[in-house]
Each structure stands twice: as C-alpha cells, then as structure tokens.
Length: 123
Image 1 (cartoon, helix red, strand yellow):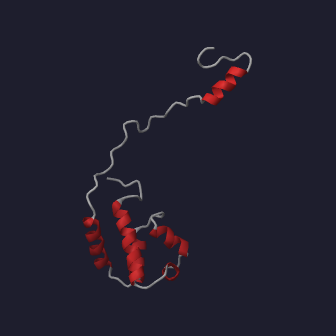
Image 2: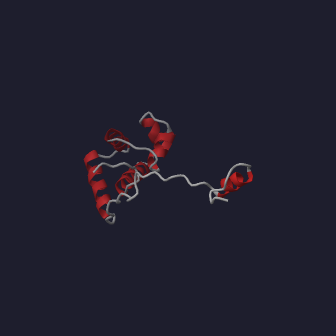
Image 3: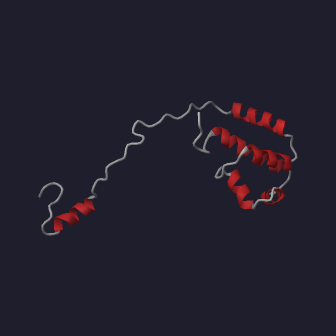
C-alpha cells in the first residue's frame, strides 16, 4: 500500500525515536544539524513530522547519534509494534466528486436589488 502522508503512526514513531536518540547522545538540534551539514530548522521540521526523510538521512542521523543502524532498526520495530493497532483509513465515498458552488445568501440579496435581475427563488 502506497503511503501518501507523513501523518502515520509509524512515521511518528520514527521521528520520535530519532529525537530520543539525539537527546540520549546529549546533542542539541543545532549541534546535530551541523554534523550532518544541514540547518537547525531542517532537523526541527523533521522532528515535528513536517518534513519527510529517506533511509539515507535516517542512517546518517543514527550514526551521528552514535548508534548502530541495525540496533536502531530493532528499536524502531519494537516501538511500532508497541503502538495500538489502527486500521488503514477508508476512502470517502464522495472522494473525487466536485461540489457545485452554491450562491451565498449575500449574493442572492444583491442580485435581487439590481434592476432586471431575478432572485434565485424566482421573485
């Protein structure tokens, strides 16, 4: 199944574990970001789940934090399994159907005041 969002329990567990490892290593965001040649704002956005990351970024950060990547993977899997099961979301029945714009009551009253125009209710 293709993921279309960063807002999954698994991704939340990943970024939370990365943050915990950084704190265990005793590094600030600025210090860790400097070691991977990125701005502090990049790491901050990553840790709050606002930025995606790939496996190479994860591997690089884990190494900077002084952990073995294989041990990190085991720890991540434990965290993910410890979370309660949440079934995948179902698609909405009306997904892909465009709603037709309805005239607002304000525009209807304006139309009624102009000469030669009729209100939507026919008056």
